[in-house]
Length: 452
Image 1 (cartoon, one colour):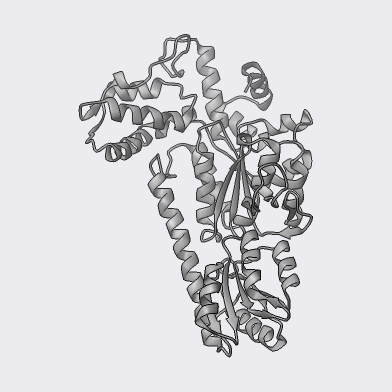
Image 2 (tube, one colour):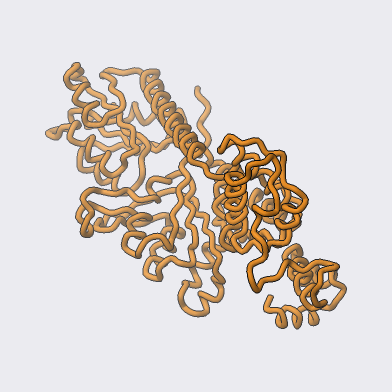
């Protein structure tokens, strides 16, 4: 007997046949191989089940009583374009096979069939799905505009963030990534998916500020044709497309208040409805979110639901800004320079001492995104093998370089920066106070004084 598949590799399979013995045979064959099976006997029940949950593949008989199984194929694919459909029939002919493929079927097996034929058909579908996912990954690699992320760090705060992310990755717990714009929240979300048991399934990204409310709802939950002006065809939505995988909601603090109860319901019950469609659907999707906002403040201002905040904030990962992990700056800059040197077919030996000093003195308000842009620009404009300081942005007018021991600035400025960095690198206020050599009450007053 074949060993059952891990839950992450199991397929959701819809079996549509009006003969009970065929349904039982297919169910036993598929469940023996570890897949989850939903058997139905007619056209209407098949459509109803497909409207409630996501299926990866379906076995469809061509004769469904008075209904034609060929007509069911486009209906199933309209709701789930990724579904692989295998046609089964006792009336096999070249014409019906060609017509089934024309309407979107993936494969075709005649009755009577053996368990080996069923297993072979499923393995072919699994191979196609694996290839599709590899193609998607390769396309993403080709479109990548920055070097592949590396998570080794000399910064204690960044080390803690990565360790927390790795610890949470194998679970299905909701993860909230917090940090300034450009710190790499999307990159870390992708890594969490890659480190999880869902890594072989889809990873989707939705930017909450990028769409108005109704379009954002459609992007998340999908819509039926005619649900609103311009909805000329069914849209399954990102939740359905990511079934079994991970959905990353970027800048969740911008999620409209009207959508927050719907997202909360999905997180609690794994159920949702598409726009313009009353059918309740289910999907198994892990949700990771990110924000650069003070969500606690948004809750107090009644702009963000408290119950949704607690549901999203099961595991919180705080990503430090680049100015607080300057220990990594030289290596990050070198990594980006090597990447853009290959992209632009240039050979670089590195940065001059002056350029490195300019990098360290810059405040990096745009964080890693700004660093990437600075290095790319330098790799295009520089005509020598060494990137000089003239290609690195200097302090903006009216701004100051980051405080450090020996800098020509007040002790107060140096104290503020030191307290900020110690707080970012500490697990608690008590630990930070111990490192600073002051009591917690004094630290509290300093935080209030500097607005930390």
